[in-house]
Image (cartoon, rainbow, N blue to C red; front, top):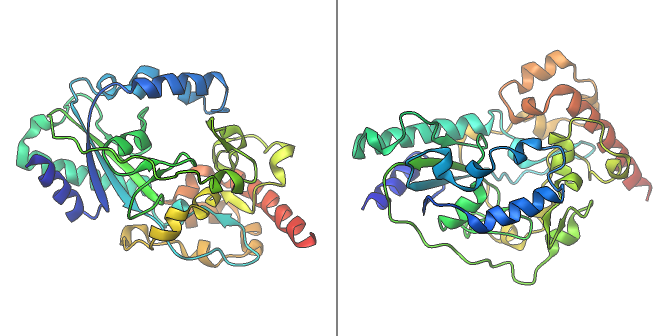
Length: 316
């Protein structure tokens, strides 16, 4: 079967999971996204307002596509931040930016499929390889491809890996038998809602304007006063809602991907190291990493607020 071949090829390239979905319009997501945007929950991520039709329908993004191939790559590492140090979300631990790692693997998977099934499997006119790089709802497609469910923390939760996974997508111009979705297993659990320091999570989904990940990465101005003491020590992203998730406690295990080797500075540096970091040193040390995307100035500003939080915590 074509589906089996694709999944076996993905596994041989190092992906931890692969699923298949039928490319079609996401009508329910369109309604939700409209309400979410009108409520202003996207904050200053104005790009979320653009390319709406493409975002909810991959056939508008890549005309002629019929199948969505979704891959997952585990990035969890069982290694806590050092004491007296700012916290960094685990997605940014690696020396190499995960976008580059996954895109290379997806290109390899594309070649495997082409060699087996022919060049016409993919569009020759439109970009069809995606890693956080296009208006496409990656987590929803992962859910539709049977790779898990969207938890109350809005993250994909895979039965066997948890939520510490990167998502990669290939859009194919051929039909492939789709996988069956998995129903949610969150039940009545609301630990992620209760643990969020800024109360960014609720029955309405995620209010990005309050999210620590948004405030430390996407928000380019000074963090609002109301949130400066609520960052929980993070300077890049946030893992709190994932850390408290029972499914991560059950399933998350350290990855074995050499390409995602953690940066030794992140594992060992304390506040004094980060505070004395120069712009030139930042570029040299983190040039190929996800932190470089955030930028030196933003990281330095976040360090100030993270240290302030730690000081307040110790004085309580």
